[in-house]
Image 1 (spheres, rainbow, N blue to C red):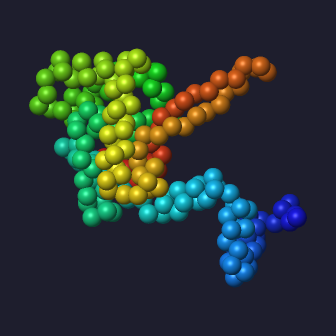
Image 2: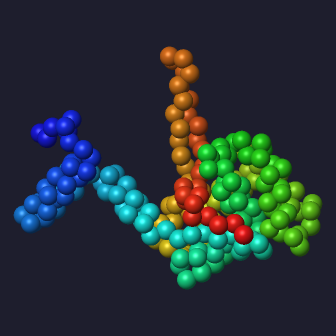
Image 3: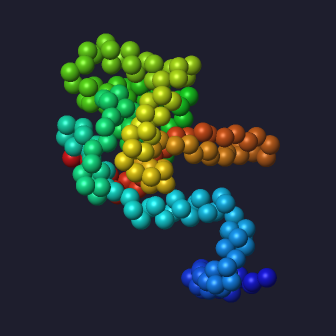
Length: 194
């Protein structure tokens, strides 16, 4: 077994590269996969996709454009844009069950993206979104995911969609609870709001 205490991460990576090449030369990629494991392989594919991410430009008229993918537009309805803007503004994440705390902010985004829509309809739509007993927020997130998947593979899309992030909290010695946050993992340096 390799001693890791005296090696830098860069030296370990070089050793791993060398061992990988040896296994490949021996035709034993099966052993390589067994050593790495499928969950790590998925994590590596997501990490590899990070280098292929596009800047997301949100124009003054609330068009969502992928600047580095031939300026392709992400086709979303105003309600979906409002939901997306809310989560984009909160990189720390939001629990769906606490969406009512963001009612005013969500209403502002919806009114900005749906200028021609009746204010009562917007408020009614927001009421559905923030109601924890209503499935509206899940439906909107599914539609957002579908819009990004129409433009890119699932690994790159995983950075743009609203996805789950579970955070474990420990209070004292016996109480443990989980915060089930929804986040957009896209690095905010790739977001350009005009």
